[in-house]
Image 1 (cartoon, rainbow, N blue to C red):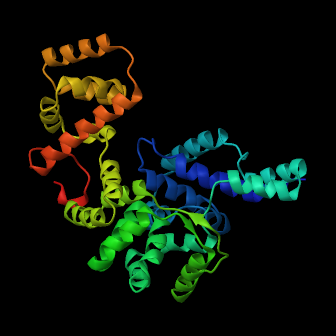
Image 2: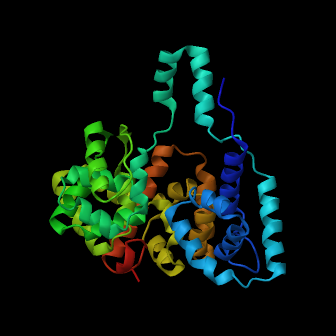
Image 3: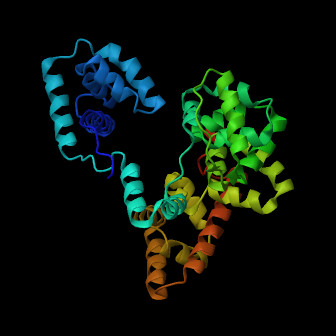
Length: 356
């Protein structure tokens, strides 16, 4: 029979989830202040149980704010409690330890061996427990830990970090190592237990908790593109250029992921208008046919009323289009946006502090 949820653990999990999600729209208190007040109302053991289930950045934010809410008034406390109770009332514990329940059901239905095969094929992959310790380490610590290691190990470590942390660590590595790490991160596939064990030893040396190794699948062009968008235009351009010498197709894929047609929503109206005026309607019509309503409205709003009406009329006349045609047209528009950005005529966003 599946293991039954422990009420106390379930309550802590529910409180942690509600704490993270209940506060965004409090009118008179900031998110962090409201969450800090809630934590201070719990006992020390209860609060520590909740904190242990939050992300490192959330713990850091709350820790710095709790000192500032000691003199909060009764009205603010009641407001926070009312909102917390309202949000918590709509939450359930159905997902608590669901992996144990699913495993038990599959084992009962299929037998242990067939259940294990099914779980290995369908269950979401999780990082080894010890790799979770990476989230709590400063970028400087991680960079110092991996800068003398093989680039493949460095790439594996980066793959388990958040985008901004990975970008920070990458920027701290020697420049001659960065290019190799980026390539390996973009092509990282199935990872052996030996590689995981190497990271365990590295973490142990940095006083991180040791756990059991598992096979992981991490790293892809999208992940690398997200990191490239955080490290500055000059650095990302250099790394993409170096990567193109090794794998031109992969470099192109990463560039495509760094700025997509959907990202045009972030471009300033003036620059967006410049881009649209440089693209022929034969490309704009199919490109906009596949755009969501918000982006389409922004693009049309950057045009003269006459040009926008003409474009809308042409889209209506064309009717349904093959998705392949839409995608190619959108790629053409993005390519033109990049050309204008490279020439300094527009700013298309991303790229860290090289963009102003």
